[in-house]
Image (cartoon, rainbow, N blue to C red):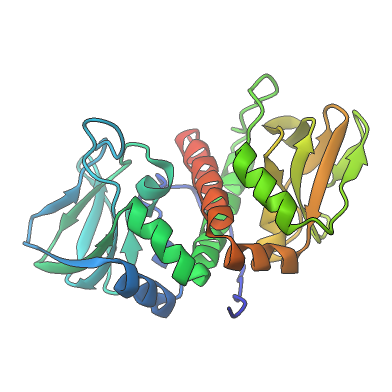
Length: 296
């Protein structure tokens, strides 16, 4: 698996998560996407005016519409919310991935402007495909992180960051996956921090991400707690992936035991453990969806 070129851009105002398409990002690689979809997906033809999915369509549960993501082979797709067209999907671009990752209702509508051909994959096909093409997971992570940084910058400028000091601690990995990760990283020693002790500072260079083995870590921006990370949760991965400075502060809210991963560890885990990559993607997508829903 080759490494990725994680580029940097100037922060932009946030858009609804489903509408902020990956191909609008400088880290999007059309060849990687095409290879992934050709291996895991199936072809579909959509007539002009056809709706692939509509805003508020459910993607899980009894009345689920579908949880598909798409790659456009021919034609043009309009992405809209109500009467407002937010943009168009061009040939070679992917769209609809947020619902596949979060299993939340669609946040926008995708309509064929012309007769179109697409490749589609559902959630199960996506999970299977990651086993063969983990580089696609890395690309999506880079895209999610870029969009999270852009949205966070917009929230900071508007002083619209929500304080989650009383929120329930978050977790990324369940007990089964944590057990598997500990087995894979059995040669790594955990590090301990006492309650109130700082762990990382905004603006610092990020050499490690952390998995919380026990305790709770408070992540903050502008003095507001934006996440409380509990056992099985992670923090610090953004700077590890895109090699940009830390975007937040983190301190031990209680006595903590942490497992640190460097960039090589992270890339190796994405390649060797599709479940790790999928869990990280799900967490990033959920974070982006939450942030864009609070953007004003």
